[in-house]
Image 1 (cartoon, rainbow, N blue to C red):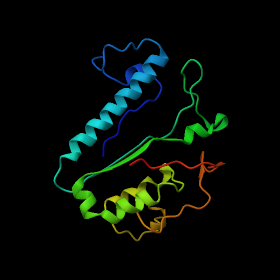
Image 2 (cartoon, rainbow, N blue to C red; image 1 turned 90 degrees about the vertical axis):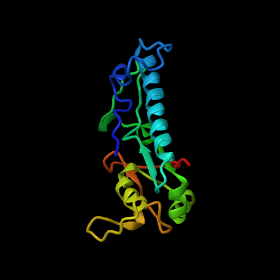
Image 3 (tube, rainbow, N blue to C red; image 1 turned 180 degrees about the horizontal axis):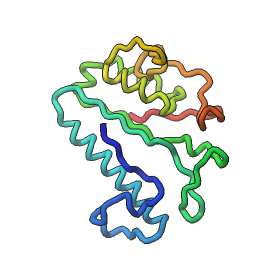
Image 4 (tube, one colour; image 1 turned 135 degrees about the vertical axis):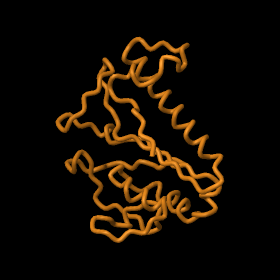
Length: 173
């Protein structure tokens, strides 16, 4: 597990000064854009590192939330000024060749389910599935694992259950 600092407010503190010094990072907008580039760079480096492994490896990247920035590139996020863009998050799944060979049905199911609703509230179920762990415990529902062929999410909500999700997001392959 790798936890990235991502692109939360304080954008100028989200990348080292040595990263792409040719890009200005003086305004909030410039810092935000450079922090996104740095986050993408780190994710790419992680995938590159694990792509060389001989054992099965999956990489799952997702953001905790999207952001709605005001015209000063400040984040204002709370329950009272919710905007659907705050629920739109990047999510990437990567599988090396050994994983694809060992678990072809999981990869196929994710591709098949990519047009279905998915929220990061289901990361636990997806992680359990990608790790090929069988669980029987209260609160765990294998039908919420999008790497399974019986994946289904009825009535998806976000914003602490206050807002119904009206649009679909895709898993990226």
